[in-house]
Length: 498
Image 1: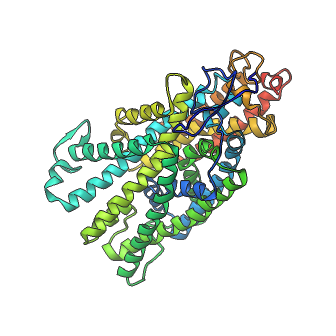
Image 2: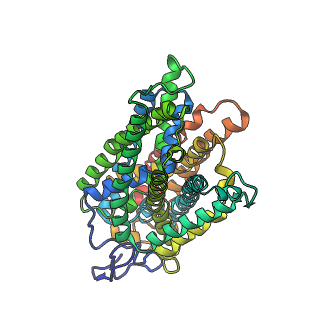
Image 3: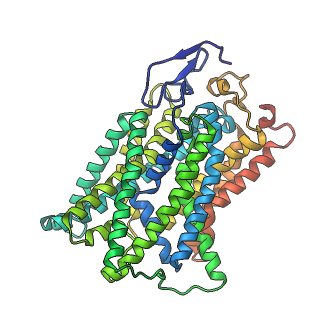
């Protein structure tokens, strides 16, 4: 148990820490310690979600729903329904970190144990590395299109050229490296600089997207058809397809939803966080959805074909200024989402593994380097990759979410002893068995196997893929039920820790 002597250390990139004497250095550094001051208000959380939504990947994912055979209004309903589910779960996961002022991997010490928390930390951090590479690659590919459009001489070095290395064109390497450096630079300046950046870039992207949508509607003489599907779904198939689309939306946001505590910990109150979630998710996403649908619909009369990629749309405009502005906008948007969703998470997660050797900044840079090693362009650049990747990632994230929520709300009934999250003492509430809670580990393993199987088995056997769309829900629900059942049995390690 830590005693009551407090230490307020100087500002650090992740925030000003409050460390007590007795906090074990094997579990503590200035980045993982509870915050001494929580400053973020409603607007900051709102801006966080704006940055998380407005990315090339976000627009491409939303646009890909048309390929399922849905009409525009069905796509709109699916997007909004999915984001309402995301809002509900984000409010659940936000509270423990906001109340305690600690990041996601530290709050995981309660259900998994002070050592066992490295299991969800490494899983979530690894997923963030993959997403970092994906988002950077998508944005670099967008820049490639724009640069080739502006400078014909670059075509030989672009995606359709003959010059490439490890599966990526020379131009692609250049744009990927440029975005890599820009993102690392913003991250390196620390959380307050990141907060100011996302406060700006979310609204800035909106301005350009409204301008693009308005321009296309004007060019179409304000006559657009909202029936953009090439298929004609009827009856029950409409319902099942919309449910699959809703599940895909949840899976897309499953990463930042799981580690949302990394941001809610900065909220000055839980009410401020909830208001920010309300504005940033259903309200913001509804506007985003309308823009996506209208912009896609207007490309048909303007360009003679349906274009769901906004970068491709911008590159078709016969105006150099518009092309440059669009390229800068989507680059800014991608930097925003990559930092908030895929830089900050592994920064905390990897730091949790070895707090004295891996700082917040070091953890983030490990993720950045890992994203290049993965060469995401080699496994993501195909027609079905977006939906397949979302399913696999959701399968891994769902069980971790289920265990965390079951432990905090049902098993512990929202009671936490923050000091015990930082002690290796065997008398600490979160020591369990050698620092690991077998209940949480077993529940995660059981749910993870079933959830991943729901993605891989249909694909391997060719027996149908609809169940894979629900991998996040399968993993989350099964882990939730398994943990409640195992932790509720007589003599459970978890019950002895209460």
